[in-house]
Image 1: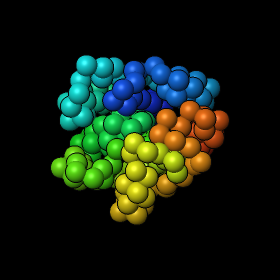
Image 2: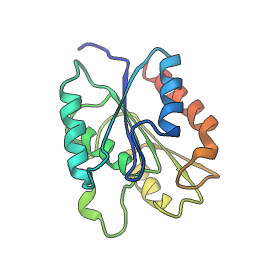
Image 3: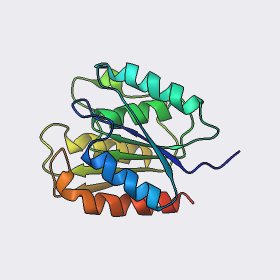
Image 4: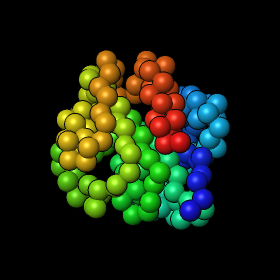
Length: 169
């Protein structure tokens, strides 16, 4: 199998493909020799439709890639990784185990290195879902003093992301 150093970002419901976090993380990935892509889900309200788009993208790649997702994009990346191989998952405040959305949990759960970063003060997506997911899958969960957007935590997120990518080889 060809080893690819490629990262694909999935943005949240209200953001776009090249928002502040994605631009910053893409720069961090490129500095480490990774190629990057960020899919545009604007106008697609259904998370499952977004996951289908990401799965189709992953199937076009020569080998498994690293999937990164924020908020709804975290669900999208996780759902895609449950259907196609992923080299790793890096999730920011992922919409996992959301109350009232149990049918949106992907099955089977992905089997790849996973790191979740969530803000203690997130009032949009409860961090309890990330903790639960980490407990169920063995994913690493890092809780930061931040809100849902995590933009005040970009320096720490980029350090964690660089280390995560470096750990994948």
